[in-house]
Amino acid sequence: MTSLIKTGLLSYGTSGKIFHAPFIDKHPHFELAAVVERSVKNANNDYPDIKSFDSVESIINDNDIELIIVNTPNATHFDFAMQALKNGKHVLLEKAFCCTSLEARQLFSEARKRKLYVLPYQNRRYDGDFLSVKKVIDSGVLGQLVEIHLHFDRYRYTISHKAKEKPGPGSGIQYDLGPHVLDAALALFGIPRQWSKTVGYFRPGTEVDDYAHFHLSYADGKQVFVSTSMLVADPQPGFIIHGTKGSYIKQRVNVQEEQLLKGISLSDPAYGLETKDTSGKLTLANEQGTVIRKDVKAERGNYLKVFDDVYNTIRHDDSYPVTEDQIIKQIEIIES
Image 1 (tube, helix red, strand yellow):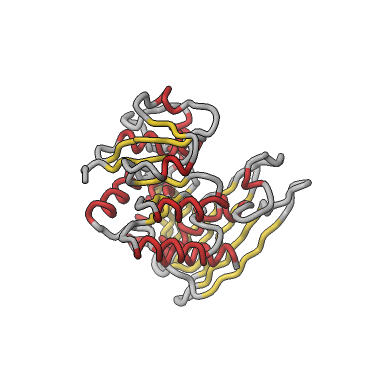
Image 2: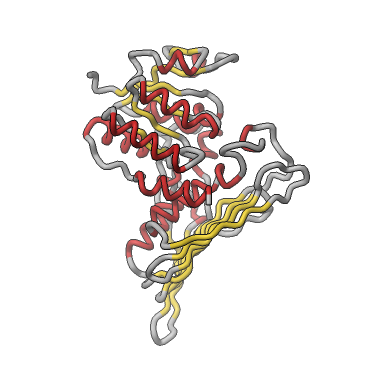
Protein backbone atom coordinates (compact mmCIF):
# COMPACT_ATOMS: atom_id res chain seq x y z
CA MET A 1 0.00 0.00 0.00
CA THR A 2 1.35 3.40 -0.98
CA SER A 3 2.08 5.84 1.81
CA LEU A 4 -0.03 8.46 0.02
CA ILE A 5 -3.73 8.25 0.80
CA LYS A 6 -5.48 8.56 -2.55
CA THR A 7 -8.60 10.56 -1.85
CA GLY A 8 -11.87 11.10 -3.67
CA LEU A 9 -14.33 13.96 -3.12
CA LEU A 10 -18.04 13.36 -3.67
CA SER A 11 -18.72 17.02 -4.49
CA TYR A 12 -16.81 20.02 -5.78
CA GLY A 13 -19.08 22.79 -4.56
CA THR A 14 -18.11 25.23 -1.82
CA SER A 15 -17.31 22.47 0.66
CA GLY A 16 -15.08 20.51 -1.70
CA LYS A 17 -13.42 23.50 -3.30
CA ILE A 18 -12.77 25.45 -0.09
CA PHE A 19 -12.63 23.10 2.89
CA HIS A 20 -11.19 19.91 1.43
CA ALA A 21 -9.36 20.10 -1.89
CA PRO A 22 -6.72 22.70 -0.92
CA PHE A 23 -5.75 20.76 2.20
CA ILE A 24 -5.63 17.35 0.52
CA ASP A 25 -3.52 18.87 -2.25
CA LYS A 26 -1.19 20.59 0.21
CA HIS A 27 -0.78 17.70 2.64
CA PRO A 28 2.34 15.58 1.97
CA HIS A 29 0.57 12.30 2.79
CA PHE A 30 -2.52 12.68 0.60
CA GLU A 31 -3.20 12.69 -3.12
CA LEU A 32 -6.28 14.46 -4.45
CA ALA A 33 -7.08 11.75 -6.98
CA ALA A 34 -10.71 12.14 -7.99
CA VAL A 35 -13.93 14.10 -7.64
CA VAL A 36 -17.58 13.70 -8.59
CA GLU A 37 -18.96 16.42 -10.90
CA ARG A 38 -22.36 15.45 -12.23
CA SER A 39 -22.72 18.25 -14.75
CA VAL A 40 -20.29 21.19 -14.84
CA LYS A 41 -16.63 20.11 -14.83
CA ASN A 42 -14.46 22.65 -12.98
CA ALA A 43 -12.03 20.63 -10.90
CA ASN A 44 -9.51 20.14 -13.71
CA ASN A 45 -9.08 23.92 -13.92
CA ASP A 46 -7.71 23.87 -10.38
CA TYR A 47 -6.13 20.40 -10.34
CA PRO A 48 -5.16 19.30 -13.88
CA ASP A 49 -4.40 15.68 -12.94
CA ILE A 50 -7.62 14.99 -11.04
CA LYS A 51 -10.10 12.42 -12.37
CA SER A 52 -13.66 13.70 -12.64
CA PHE A 53 -16.44 11.13 -12.32
CA ASP A 54 -20.07 11.56 -13.31
CA SER A 55 -21.48 9.57 -10.40
CA VAL A 56 -20.87 8.60 -6.80
CA GLU A 57 -21.02 4.94 -7.74
CA SER A 58 -18.16 5.37 -10.21
CA ILE A 59 -15.77 7.00 -7.75
CA ILE A 60 -16.60 4.51 -5.01
CA ASN A 61 -15.86 1.61 -7.39
CA ASP A 62 -12.45 3.04 -8.33
CA ASN A 63 -9.94 0.62 -6.83
CA ASP A 64 -7.24 3.29 -6.63
CA ILE A 65 -9.22 5.40 -4.16
CA GLU A 66 -8.54 4.62 -0.51
CA LEU A 67 -10.42 7.46 1.21
CA ILE A 68 -13.82 8.88 0.27
CA ILE A 69 -14.87 12.29 1.57
CA VAL A 70 -18.65 12.48 1.83
CA ASN A 71 -19.49 16.17 1.49
CA THR A 72 -22.89 15.87 -0.15
CA PRO A 73 -26.28 16.96 1.34
CA ASN A 74 -27.00 15.60 4.82
CA ALA A 75 -29.74 13.20 3.76
CA THR A 76 -27.25 11.32 1.52
CA HIS A 77 -24.51 10.89 4.12
CA PHE A 78 -25.52 7.51 5.48
CA ASP A 79 -26.11 5.79 2.14
CA PHE A 80 -22.94 7.13 0.49
CA ALA A 81 -20.76 6.39 3.52
CA MET A 82 -22.15 2.86 3.79
CA GLN A 83 -21.54 2.25 0.08
CA ALA A 84 -17.95 3.44 0.45
CA LEU A 85 -17.32 1.22 3.47
CA LYS A 86 -18.77 -1.82 1.72
CA ASN A 87 -16.39 -1.11 -1.17
CA GLY A 88 -13.38 -1.14 1.16
CA LYS A 89 -12.89 2.61 1.51
CA HIS A 90 -12.16 4.68 4.58
CA VAL A 91 -14.62 7.56 4.95
CA LEU A 92 -14.28 11.15 6.11
CA LEU A 93 -17.82 12.34 6.74
CA GLU A 94 -18.89 15.99 6.77
CA LYS A 95 -21.24 17.38 9.36
CA ALA A 96 -23.93 16.51 10.07
CA PHE A 97 -22.39 13.05 10.38
CA CYS A 98 -25.78 11.37 9.90
CA CYS A 99 -29.44 12.24 10.33
CA THR A 100 -30.01 9.76 13.16
CA SER A 101 -27.94 8.19 15.91
CA LEU A 102 -29.03 4.76 14.66
CA GLU A 103 -27.44 5.49 11.29
CA ALA A 104 -24.26 6.64 13.02
CA ARG A 105 -24.06 3.45 15.07
CA GLN A 106 -24.53 1.35 11.93
CA LEU A 107 -21.68 3.16 10.16
CA PHE A 108 -19.29 2.76 13.07
CA SER A 109 -20.24 -0.91 13.36
CA GLU A 110 -19.71 -1.51 9.63
CA ALA A 111 -16.33 0.21 9.72
CA ARG A 112 -15.17 -1.92 12.66
CA LYS A 113 -16.37 -5.09 10.96
CA ARG A 114 -14.35 -4.27 7.86
CA LYS A 115 -11.32 -2.91 9.75
CA LEU A 116 -11.88 0.52 8.20
CA TYR A 117 -12.38 4.00 9.61
CA VAL A 118 -15.36 6.30 9.32
CA LEU A 119 -14.16 9.67 10.63
CA PRO A 120 -16.16 12.80 11.45
CA TYR A 121 -14.99 16.04 9.83
CA GLN A 122 -15.28 18.60 12.64
CA ASN A 123 -12.89 21.22 11.31
CA ARG A 124 -13.96 23.95 13.74
CA ARG A 125 -11.80 22.31 16.39
CA TYR A 126 -8.92 23.91 14.49
CA ASP A 127 -10.31 27.43 14.40
CA GLY A 128 -8.23 29.97 16.31
CA ASP A 129 -11.19 31.01 18.45
CA PHE A 130 -11.90 27.45 19.63
CA LEU A 131 -8.21 26.75 20.26
CA SER A 132 -7.90 29.96 22.29
CA VAL A 133 -10.93 29.08 24.40
CA LYS A 134 -9.63 25.56 25.00
CA LYS A 135 -6.23 26.90 26.06
CA VAL A 136 -7.77 29.27 28.61
CA ILE A 137 -10.08 26.59 30.01
CA ASP A 138 -7.30 24.00 30.21
CA SER A 139 -5.08 26.49 32.08
CA GLY A 140 -7.49 26.46 35.02
CA VAL A 141 -7.37 30.24 35.53
CA LEU A 142 -11.18 30.48 35.48
CA GLY A 143 -11.55 28.11 38.42
CA GLN A 144 -14.57 25.82 38.49
CA LEU A 145 -16.71 26.48 35.43
CA VAL A 146 -20.22 27.68 36.18
CA GLU A 147 -22.00 28.97 33.07
CA ILE A 148 -21.04 28.80 29.40
CA HIS A 149 -22.69 30.23 26.27
CA LEU A 150 -21.69 29.05 22.81
CA HIS A 151 -23.11 30.73 19.68
CA PHE A 152 -22.82 30.24 15.94
CA ASP A 153 -25.14 32.75 14.27
CA ARG A 154 -25.81 34.28 10.87
CA TYR A 155 -28.29 36.63 9.32
CA ARG A 156 -30.15 35.31 6.27
CA TYR A 157 -33.77 36.42 6.04
CA THR A 158 -34.44 34.94 2.63
CA ILE A 159 -34.78 31.20 2.12
CA SER A 160 -32.29 29.58 -0.22
CA HIS A 161 -32.90 26.68 -2.61
CA LYS A 162 -30.33 24.46 -0.91
CA ALA A 163 -31.30 21.05 0.43
CA LYS A 164 -30.83 22.16 4.05
CA GLU A 165 -33.71 24.66 3.59
CA LYS A 166 -36.13 22.01 2.37
CA PRO A 167 -38.11 19.77 4.74
CA GLY A 168 -36.72 16.29 5.19
CA PRO A 169 -34.03 14.35 7.06
CA GLY A 170 -31.02 16.44 8.05
CA SER A 171 -32.58 19.80 7.20
CA GLY A 172 -32.73 22.99 9.25
CA ILE A 173 -30.19 24.93 11.23
CA GLN A 174 -29.84 22.33 13.98
CA TYR A 175 -28.32 19.95 11.40
CA ASP A 176 -26.40 22.76 9.64
CA LEU A 177 -24.66 24.89 12.28
CA GLY A 178 -25.80 22.86 15.29
CA PRO A 179 -23.09 20.19 14.86
CA HIS A 180 -20.39 22.88 15.08
CA VAL A 181 -21.47 24.31 18.42
CA LEU A 182 -22.52 21.00 19.92
CA ASP A 183 -19.17 19.48 18.98
CA ALA A 184 -17.42 22.41 20.65
CA ALA A 185 -19.42 21.79 23.84
CA LEU A 186 -18.71 18.05 23.84
CA ALA A 187 -15.02 18.56 23.04
CA LEU A 188 -14.54 21.16 25.77
CA PHE A 189 -16.79 19.81 28.52
CA GLY A 190 -17.55 16.16 27.80
CA ILE A 191 -20.86 14.30 27.73
CA PRO A 192 -23.67 16.11 29.61
CA ARG A 193 -25.80 14.46 32.28
CA GLN A 194 -28.99 15.76 30.68
CA TRP A 195 -30.14 18.22 28.04
CA SER A 196 -33.13 19.97 26.54
CA LYS A 197 -33.80 21.56 23.16
CA THR A 198 -35.87 24.40 21.74
CA VAL A 199 -36.28 25.14 18.02
CA GLY A 200 -37.98 28.00 16.20
CA TYR A 201 -39.40 28.85 12.78
CA PHE A 202 -39.25 32.61 12.26
CA ARG A 203 -38.64 33.50 8.62
CA PRO A 204 -41.79 33.93 6.52
CA GLY A 205 -42.43 30.75 4.57
CA THR A 206 -39.70 28.70 6.19
CA GLU A 207 -40.31 24.96 6.27
CA VAL A 208 -37.32 24.16 8.46
CA ASP A 209 -36.07 25.40 11.82
CA ASP A 210 -34.00 28.58 11.64
CA TYR A 211 -33.32 28.82 15.39
CA ALA A 212 -32.08 26.14 17.78
CA HIS A 213 -31.10 26.28 21.44
CA PHE A 214 -29.69 23.45 23.53
CA HIS A 215 -29.28 23.48 27.31
CA LEU A 216 -26.69 20.97 28.52
CA SER A 217 -26.37 20.20 32.25
CA TYR A 218 -23.31 18.50 33.74
CA ALA A 219 -22.77 16.36 36.80
CA ASP A 220 -20.49 18.97 38.41
CA GLY A 221 -23.21 21.61 38.14
CA LYS A 222 -22.00 23.65 35.18
CA GLN A 223 -24.59 24.79 32.69
CA VAL A 224 -23.82 25.07 28.97
CA PHE A 225 -26.14 26.98 26.65
CA VAL A 226 -25.66 26.31 22.95
CA SER A 227 -27.48 28.46 20.39
CA THR A 228 -27.55 28.94 16.64
CA SER A 229 -29.76 31.23 14.58
CA MET A 230 -30.27 32.50 11.05
CA LEU A 231 -31.60 35.82 12.33
CA VAL A 232 -28.80 37.54 14.23
CA ALA A 233 -27.93 40.83 12.56
CA ASP A 234 -25.43 41.82 15.27
CA PRO A 235 -23.70 38.63 16.48
CA GLN A 236 -22.75 38.40 20.14
CA PRO A 237 -19.56 36.66 21.23
CA GLY A 238 -19.33 33.08 20.13
CA PHE A 239 -17.81 31.96 23.45
CA ILE A 240 -18.75 33.25 26.91
CA ILE A 241 -17.27 31.28 29.80
CA HIS A 242 -17.83 32.14 33.47
CA GLY A 243 -16.00 30.40 36.30
CA THR A 244 -15.50 30.88 40.02
CA LYS A 245 -12.32 32.90 39.42
CA GLY A 246 -13.08 34.79 36.25
CA SER A 247 -14.61 35.06 32.80
CA TYR A 248 -13.41 34.69 29.23
CA ILE A 249 -15.20 36.26 26.27
CA LYS A 250 -14.20 35.49 22.68
CA GLN A 251 -15.72 36.54 19.37
CA ARG A 252 -16.30 33.84 16.78
CA VAL A 253 -13.96 34.68 13.91
CA ASN A 254 -14.30 32.81 10.64
CA VAL A 255 -10.88 33.85 9.40
CA GLN A 256 -9.87 30.64 7.61
CA GLU A 257 -13.06 30.42 5.56
CA GLU A 258 -12.82 34.10 4.65
CA GLN A 259 -9.20 33.72 3.59
CA LEU A 260 -9.89 30.59 1.56
CA LEU A 261 -12.78 32.29 -0.26
CA LYS A 262 -10.39 35.12 -1.15
CA GLY A 263 -7.90 32.65 -2.57
CA ILE A 264 -5.24 33.14 0.09
CA SER A 265 -2.71 30.32 -0.01
CA LEU A 266 -2.25 27.94 2.91
CA SER A 267 1.44 28.83 2.80
CA ASP A 268 0.73 32.55 3.27
CA PRO A 269 2.25 33.70 6.60
CA ALA A 270 -1.07 35.34 7.48
CA TYR A 271 -3.14 32.22 6.92
CA GLY A 272 -5.18 31.28 10.01
CA LEU A 273 -4.18 34.37 11.98
CA GLU A 274 -6.77 36.67 13.51
CA THR A 275 -6.26 40.41 13.79
CA LYS A 276 -5.46 42.00 17.14
CA ASP A 277 -8.91 43.53 17.53
CA THR A 278 -10.47 40.05 17.85
CA SER A 279 -8.41 39.07 20.89
CA GLY A 280 -10.28 37.32 23.68
CA LYS A 281 -11.09 39.23 26.87
CA LEU A 282 -9.95 37.54 30.09
CA THR A 283 -11.21 38.97 33.39
CA LEU A 284 -9.88 37.49 36.62
CA ALA A 285 -10.98 38.34 40.16
CA ASN A 286 -9.47 37.33 43.51
CA GLU A 287 -11.14 36.85 46.89
CA GLN A 288 -10.51 40.49 47.79
CA GLY A 289 -12.42 41.64 44.72
CA THR A 290 -9.38 42.83 42.78
CA VAL A 291 -10.08 42.55 39.07
CA ILE A 292 -7.44 42.05 36.38
CA ARG A 293 -8.34 42.34 32.70
CA LYS A 294 -6.17 41.39 29.78
CA ASP A 295 -6.40 40.58 26.11
CA VAL A 296 -5.60 37.06 24.96
CA LYS A 297 -4.25 36.75 21.44
CA ALA A 298 -6.02 34.09 19.41
CA GLU A 299 -4.22 30.89 18.57
CA ARG A 300 -3.42 30.25 14.93
CA GLY A 301 -6.01 28.08 13.24
CA ASN A 302 -5.22 25.53 10.56
CA TYR A 303 -7.64 23.00 9.07
CA LEU A 304 -4.65 21.11 7.68
CA LYS A 305 -4.41 19.51 11.12
CA VAL A 306 -7.69 17.69 10.48
CA PHE A 307 -5.87 15.79 7.77
CA ASP A 308 -2.95 15.15 10.10
CA ASP A 309 -5.48 13.43 12.36
CA VAL A 310 -7.00 11.48 9.47
CA TYR A 311 -3.58 10.32 8.26
CA ASN A 312 -2.37 9.29 11.72
CA THR A 313 -5.56 7.33 12.33
CA ILE A 314 -5.58 5.51 8.98
CA ARG A 315 -1.84 4.83 8.79
CA HIS A 316 -0.89 4.47 12.46
CA ASP A 317 -4.18 3.53 14.17
CA ASP A 318 -3.92 6.60 16.40
CA SER A 319 -7.03 7.57 18.33
CA TYR A 320 -9.08 10.08 16.35
CA PRO A 321 -9.84 13.26 18.35
CA VAL A 322 -13.57 13.24 17.55
CA THR A 323 -14.81 10.08 19.23
CA GLU A 324 -17.67 7.76 18.38
CA ASP A 325 -19.35 8.56 21.70
CA GLN A 326 -19.18 12.29 21.00
CA ILE A 327 -20.72 11.95 17.54
CA ILE A 328 -23.52 9.67 18.71
CA LYS A 329 -24.30 11.98 21.63
CA GLN A 330 -24.25 15.01 19.32
CA ILE A 331 -26.87 13.41 17.07
CA GLU A 332 -28.93 12.17 20.01
CA ILE A 333 -29.13 15.74 21.28
CA ILE A 334 -30.13 17.06 17.85
CA GLU A 335 -32.77 14.37 17.25
CA SER A 336 -34.23 14.58 20.78
